[in-house]
Amino acid sequence: MKLTRRQTLMAGAALPLASVPTMVAADGHAATSLPTHRDFTLGDFKVTTLLVGSRSVPEPHKIFGLNVDDKTFEDVSTANFLPTDAAQFFFTPTVVNTGSEVILFDTGLNAEGTTKALSAAGYATSDITHVVVTHMHGDHIGGLMDGEGNETFSGAAYVTGQVEFDAWAKAENDGFEGKVRPLAEKFSFIGGGDDVRSGITAVESFGHTPGHLTYMLESGGKQLLLMADTANHYVWSVAYPEWEVRFDMDKAAAAATRKKLMDMAATDRFPVIGYHMPFPGLGFIETRGEGGYRYVPHSYQLI
Image (cartoon, rainbow, N blue to C red; front, side, top):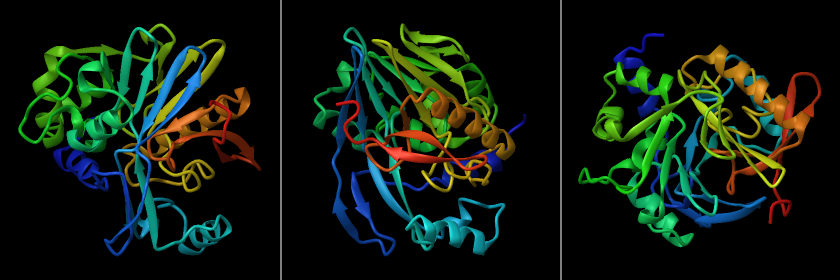
């Protein structure tokens, strides 16, 4: 798949931006402040989701459900108590503390927001031993460098998918060139089925981007899937996996990946963390009728 400069720039630029964990209303005014982090336990792992930003984005039907008509989108939204004039986006990197490593999955929109959330969760940037980039969209690589071009996690090893890196390396994308290219020699590259560390395995989940990877965590006989951007909304993507999403670069492949991973989660009943799910981003998946699913938010299962 060849990515044109226009396609990659549009994919990155289209993502809504926010830098602090404050809910911003559609009219631009700050609304309710949100927590910065939440801790969970998975066997011997401590898993922490970081809220590095949240923003209201208008006209969600121009983002989700591109292949359904206005009435269908409105009916589904109304049935799920969702407004049709705005969508709330959440940006949620995840820290996995294995006891011997502290691994950060994705770096948020910018260094400032991510380091603030890390600090609130009790971590300094120097504590991070590994940074894993699930894919190269701007809201996942933005925190690799600060505004002055300084490396945020200078003591960490960097890991990403080989397919993903190779695709963006050819794309002439400004975000990649500014945030990832300067660190290229520090990256190691993996594919589906490879381990970042024991109990953390990459899962090939292409479609949202050419080499998008998700990660299965396993500890103490328990599993949890970091599904990154496989599904960007708990209704408009999870419940209706065939609905096209503007940010998905290969929409057919992204829909197939959603169905595959949602089937796995529903069948095996393991929790998932989604980068854009309502904070704290953790929930469960169950089947809903024929071909659809329902997102069940975490309450106290992994305390």
